[in-house]
Amino acid sequence: MEEAGREKDRTVAVVVEDTSAATKDAAAAVSTKPAKRYPLALWIAILGLIMLVGVYIFSLSLKQNGMLFGLMQANMIEKEREKPCHDPRIPDAEIPYVHYPTPNTYDREECACTGVRFFAILSMQRSGSGWVETLLNSHPNISSNGEIFSVKERRSNVTAITKTLDKLYNLDWYSSAAKNECTAAVGLKWMLNQGLMKHHQEMVKYFNRRGVSAIFLLRKNLLQRYVSILANAHDSAMKQLNGTHKAHVHSKDEAEILAQYKPTIDRKMLITELKRSDKLASDALVNFKNTRHIVLYYEDVVRNRTKLMDVLDFLRMPERKLSSRHVKIHTKQLCDHIDNWADVSNALMGTRFESFLNGSSR
Image (cartoon, rainbow, N blue to C red):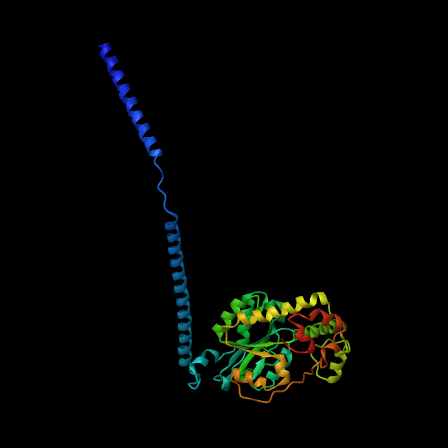
């Protein structure tokens, strides 16, 4: 019996050992089997397919956004047609730019159905915007309310900016230029460096949503503009007119006093400053290209006042003779307004700004 038991144990041990060996062999066989590899061409094809799908989805998104904007425009036109003040003579393309504000601070009374155009003069300091604005304000139907965003709190963020604009375009903004009840075009003067370019994406959306028309007023000769900036900064510090600083003057005597100052220009910084100003203006034109806008140059208006009739037509205002009390300060050749003219001339010769030296534009 004992022998039989030992024999049985040996048999079980052998079976266990054989099974263990077989398992190891099988594992070895599995581990030594080469991993399946996909050819490089297949991976490239898969990546290409993923890219094509992504481009297709992106194109669909753009198309849907375009269709959405078109539907919004159509919906806006239909809503305007349903309003009691709608003028059937206004073309469909013009409807988004004609508004009928209901101010919170007064009643428009008999002018409630007088359509109002919203506009913004987009410019840079010392580019003639103050002069042009006074010319437009001499029109009985136009109210341009000055450099509203010179106050930092009003441009501190997008919310502050839109809140200010909403108040202005609702005809609730009071200024000496406000014509209130029967205003047919209302706007402001807005410098590019006063939050406009910083928040340009939001402002383009606002302009398109609210139907605001942009009037770009720029200066071709940036050297003349730079001289005006330096001279204005000097008067701000020295207050040459009886202890008072005046950015704009209304008499030739005052203009002659201010024109006596000849700035000394840092030739090392001059090119950098001209490039910066040029880029700022160029970027603004690109960023706002999809808004309803017109581009006006100061030099063209000085030579030909009828250029302002283009602005009146742009705003759909009746033509009127426009006037301003502003008197031009720098009337002589540039060489007579710059103290170190030789240095400035040498710095600009051979550059893309060379034509500025003779008072021309590029």
